[in-house]
Length: 332
Image (cartoon, rainbow, N blue to C red):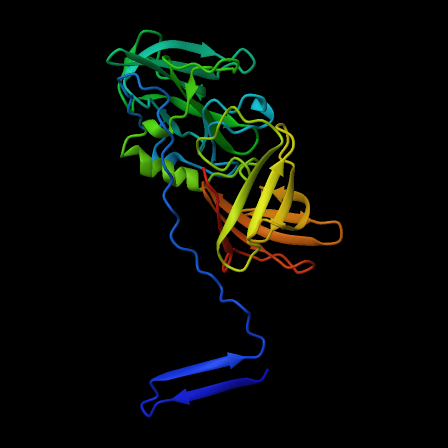
């Protein structure tokens, strides 16, 4: 390739090279991710609960999924959105009370004997809350109705999750002054805005490793439960050489099946087709964009409002990592 190099200045103060095949525009470099505005508290009633995370830092795992967010629409809660967080634990991981309170109920799952749900009531002023922990095993002797528990007290061990070799619990917060008409668990609210300053960094670490099938359209730890389908989300390039915009549309609440559109900065559609994803590949999920005459292979990673995407040209092999990936952002 012919290069023209020009040296200027006696002291060799500057050097510049031009290439006949240089791109017309320089590669953009992504600025730091803009901070998300925390989701609002569900009510204005005085008395705000402060939550710890129900897991210790060393007890987390992401062998299967890491963490599934509030409001996510999946096969088990397709119609009204996930009413809490599913948190993956290492085998034998301890489950802790997220706040001080009084145990309302301890119930055994009739379909899986030995698995328990613990319901704890929390009163802040005149405001009543309830935290729920399901799929617990090995409950300590004192975990019984009417028992008083303190924040971070051990209330059990996380039960096994299928055959994955890991464990999990469902963690749910109910604001008893709040109600969503027509949904199961109508009192459920996202725990995210209630986290203490100490709990927030632990949550951020767990959340950054979460992988779940709906995140192309529902990427946040707190998503709207009242979502209708087809549901779409547009990601706009903030750095790198990928398409200016990518719009994903999920047609069915019960399956992570998507269509895509690659768009110019003006919003003009330049390519469209179907999406296939593979979440089992670690540390990054696989993606394939299939248009009528070509396929683009890629890797991606999403954490809330930012997606890193390495997308190959049609017919080229998939990247092996996200080095040099384009950065995309989306609004809450």
